Figure (cartoon, each protein chain N blue to C red):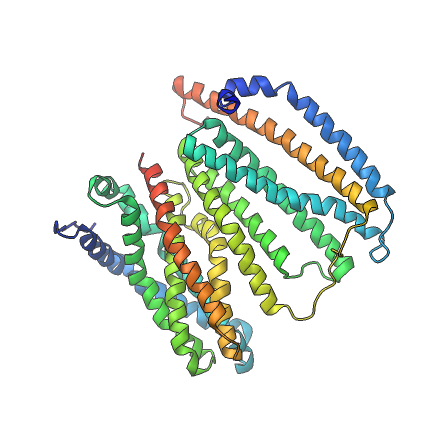
Length: 229
Length: 244
């Protein structure tokens, strides 16, 4: 359990720092997620065959699928630890709104895992045979996508607080909401590779990211409040 | 206000208990009439007898959406006005909606085989309905996994509302995806207009489904009220909730 060394000037920053520390330390969060992501991607040629033509065709979409799955990994522990040992009860009496607290926790989680997964995405895509020119756009898209995954996933995690089966349930709740970013992200990559205009897909992906940014914290705040009563 | 007057669970049970047999009867009569019309209606010139699947399939698909809407509205009232009855109504609607959705998917698949030559086509509409089904499953699973009834109601209500906002977005994204990927166009069963000879059975079946929903819903709400009462009594008598 990390200690709250809150400098009164910025409790937000203190919370972010603490949570980031926890997510980096907590059972090797980023290493675990990155390892999972790489393992998934390594299974792809093993299950579908090593033909470069097939792989390069499905690479952009597959990386998005694996990114979504890898984003699920650490959701279960996102709020649970602090819920169980009473940190949330403390935080609730503090100066920060629960919505903001939840957002900061998601942000810390994302900095710890989503950011690293996003950085790996273009590399993995190229390994599977996507053109090198895709790297920049793939990175930007993965950053936006993984942030939406983190916020939507956080909403799912907050809903299952105190339930008997966390992990699988979160996956079941959250994956349908991952459908739009996966579609837009994979579509964006597809459009780029085939030389079609990318603007539409990119703006739709951004729109969903903003939507998750607006709705996620509200949902998490409501769910946390209900869990804490 | 009639709604707040009815929000008392006991009063609700008392008022609606005598209504139930009537709704049940209405549903049965409509089903009998509708099914008769289905078989009396002419064959489609292209689809032959298989067009009759439509009278089972299309109302089921309508009800799949309608039930989710009911669930969303009930969840909204449960969350904002904290009516225990609204929570019960939302919870009661979920499995019914899941069954309607499953029915729509299964009959759609059975219809697709003779019409499109495939059990499943990844087209926009079917994919969205599949996602809707997953939603229902998630909702039911979440409710089942939280022991405390009030907390479960609140969490699932939040989920239902997020879902309600998200469903159009998911629908849109799936349609967008579909236009991206749709190669050869499949034969679409929904022609430009539906002939009146087919509209009638469809309409009657739709009403029959709706009456069936209301009937089952009322039973499930009543059961929910009774089971809460029972659990409350057990708790007061010192038994563990839900345990043996």
